[in-house]
Structure formats: structure tokens, C-alpha cells
Length: 189
Ligand SMILES: Cc1cc2nc3c(=O)[nH]c(=O)nc-3n(C[C@H](O)[C@H](O)[C@H](O)COP(=O)(O)O)c2cc1C
Image 1 (cartoon, rainbow, N blue to C red):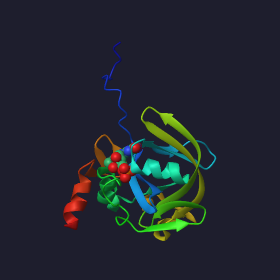
Image 2: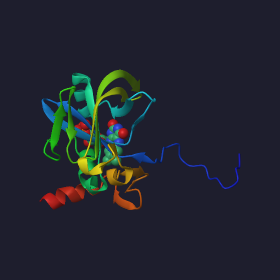
Image 3: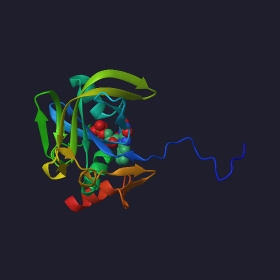
Image 4: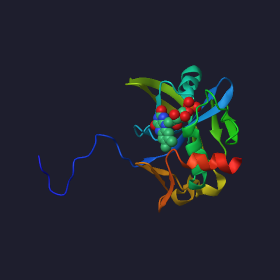
């Protein structure tokens, strides 16, 4: 069928999504994976993340029953991409960020991120080769300099937006998926 002003494209979601870091304790250490599959599911404080079954982070969430969602500011794009380029199975990612914890649950959160949610798994849904974890928020934090009148300020929270193969901040493109993390590696060497 022909529709005016439209061209049929591949059945692959383009976005936009927020690029966030899912955190879990794996073998007693913090581990983080970059994810785009994250969101709100109801007006109740419940978030979902969707993780490939073979990821290290997935095993950590299954084992502990907790995960964290950490919202990186745009200056953290290389470190965020790096956490999507390498797996905790063969690379220790525990030193990429500074981790902190809350007594409400065993998942690491990232000090450098503007906003952090600690979630307790309340439902697990298999989706093809992924697992969708629904998590009730049991604790939330925001970086002091991102708060205004007791609530995170959007401009200051400065999230990373994912569209296609690009990372964008709210105003411009700031990086390339599976490339920006390499800059983190070469800057470190
Ligand atoms: C921008 C970006 C978004 C990603 N989104 C997801 C996602 O939504 N779910 C997922 O399972 N993996 C996603 N990945 C891939 C994982 O981050 C990657 O495979 C990572 O190495 C897994 O790490 P782990 O094995 O230490 O858990 C994404 C990667 C990037 C760079």
C-alpha cells in the first residue's frame, strides 16, 4: 500500500531511547552494561530493563534479585559505550565508575551518574533470547548538582539519547555506538 510521504523501512526500532547503565553484583563485584531497553511501565514506581540472557549482568540480576538503573550525563558517553563494548565475563568493569550502595538491596549504583534507581525484581518475563526484569524502585538518588527544588532538573541531568547508531545529548550528536568506548580505551592507554 502506498502512503503519502512515507517510505517503508526495516522492522527495527530506531529510537529514541535513553542510553542507561544497568548495574548488578556479579561474583561479589559491581558490573555494568549499557542498555537502551529500559523504561517506565506504570505510574507505580516500577521500571523494566531487558537484558540478553548471555550477559554477565543478567546472571547477576538473576542471582541477587536486584538491579540498578543509572542515568549517565553526556560527558560519560565513552565510559557508557565501553560498558556496552566489553563483557564482565572477561573484563573487570568494576573500576570504570565509582560504585556506591544502599542497604535496600544488593546492586551497585554509579556515583558519577546524575540519577540512580535501585530496583527489586518483582517479575521476570522471557522475550526471545532476552529477559525482561520488572523492578520496583526501592531507593533513588540524584547527584547534588542536578537537583533543583528537591527534584532532578532535566537540563542538569543531561541524559544520553540513543537514535540509530548515534548518541545524542538533548541538543546535538555526541558519539557513535560501539565506537565511543574505543576512545575511552585509547585515552586510558
Ligand atoms: C548503546 C548500547 C545499548 C545496548 N542496549 C542493550 C540492551 O538494551 N539490552 C542488552 O541486553 N544489551 C544491550 N547492549 C549490549 C550490552 O551492553 C553488551 O553486550 C555488554 O557487553 C554486556 O555486558 P555484560 O556481559 O558485562 O553484562 C547495548 C550496548 C550498547 C552500546
